[in-house]
Length: 467
Image 1: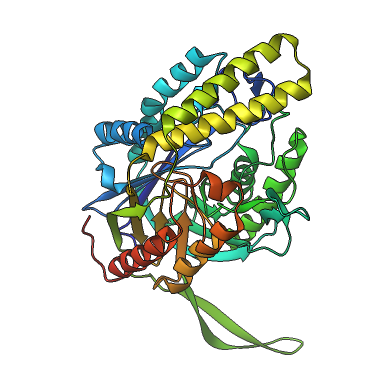
Image 2: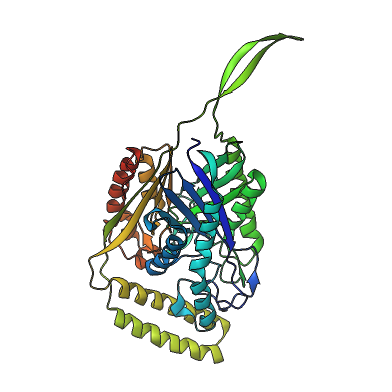
């Protein structure tokens, strides 16, 4: 596997105090007052002598396809890595800067725009740095389990479907870990893949945080060494066991729990396999068998990429101009409340304004269309496959894809190469709830994703490197 090379890079992207934060509907403040743990963009570049791949993650909530394209374009220009070979993923932290709901910002928009304008070159710089640090590596993967996540689609006695803790709902506790070591078996990079909304830190908090993924990465780096990347999984209907809190100790605790499990799994991985060889017997107080471990150099890792564009069917949405008029009316009423209303009234009005503005933006994106072009990317690194989608996929969908994969280790990565919102299961549409109401997609979109993913993974397994 010595033909494979890897390098890592990292840039601090913590916002300046005063930058608009979060984007919670219930949030009374707009500007973040400082940073708890740093926010980073972290890059892993892989190369096999003929092609390079960049795997990049940022401690941010996410971007639309246009802004994501700008970021990926900056990476391509600086590094020469083609855009088709760049996976840009966001951890989806809800307590970072507001990069996703700019229309809701009425204070500090200039700082938000300035922050976003500077991001592409800062992200590209981290990838360039990783490119300069390439060295021969071996890789391997393993999996564990962690229960800091729970199904969040809770049915109340009155029939409402809300975001809560559904202890009987579908959830995936799997912790997937891939480790890249140099030829002396020193860790260079660890990829941690896990599915859970980073909503431990809620609207009450005024500090920027990377939520639990940032703490988990910190723990892995302290315990294992090297640099850790967190690739968010299929977290569409999954939230944290404890969340929506202003207590920053909670996200640090849950992140530590996940990080320790990921570290345990990473510590069990041998990137240079060994076979036991019996060499004789030593007589002592008893007869003791003696062994030597023979190292077995693994086959060179196959590095390949596949991409395709899916045409996902859409739900029919209302006229965006009508929704925009409603949002504008609510925005005016919210402004009036800021000068005379109570905190409770302001919070309620802000929530309604955020929801209305979000619905208007979604309708404007797809109004009059029957299908939306959605990118799907697959990256193979030896026995490991990464499947990247810009969707907030329900865990049941990803579990079907992973179960049918020809790879021993398949990492499903949501919130990647853009964010286009929720992709619920067909059954969820009959249940209703937030994720269904805000989804762009029709009930049969999940089957389209599953079918295309299975074909793409089979192509990767067959060794095709076409894009």
